[in-house]
Amino acid sequence: MLQEYEKILVAIDGSSQAKKAFKKAVEVAKRNNAVLVLAHVVDTRAYQSFSTFDGSIADTARIEAKNTLKEYESYAKNEGLDNVKLVLEYGSPKVMIARQIPEAEGIDLIMLGATGLNAVERIFVGSVSEYVIRNAHCDVMIIRTDLNNKYTEQ
Image (cartoon, rainbow, N blue to C red; front, side, top):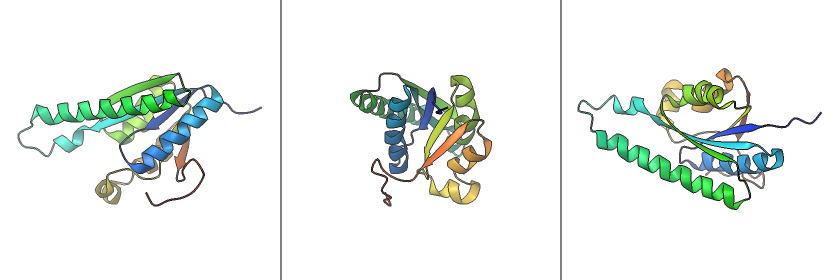
């Protein structure tokens, strides 16, 4: 029996690696007639270091994330994928992507770029992709190549 996925989650963080994963996820979703769930998690830990929290910082992050998600949704729809859901959450990206969003949305495949934007976090706490691989309860696919299966540094 051929495995078909019904709900595919791709994490969007603005990195080139996440964009590769997104483009491949669009193609996988089309082949499987699956729902594509585009998720961005605003890392609230980043705001804990500000002694005087300015709410406009969070508002700016939220607006930028919504705009990015809408751009990705437009691309997916232009590529012929009609069933796209946007998810914007707040918290730890690792936990949200590995467990909370998949459980809430009934995800059966998570597609991630090999690395994201935050190099400092990778050094000290490990990458989001590493955490998701270890902790997700569904299949996880790490994307390293573009749509032509070519590896590029960007």
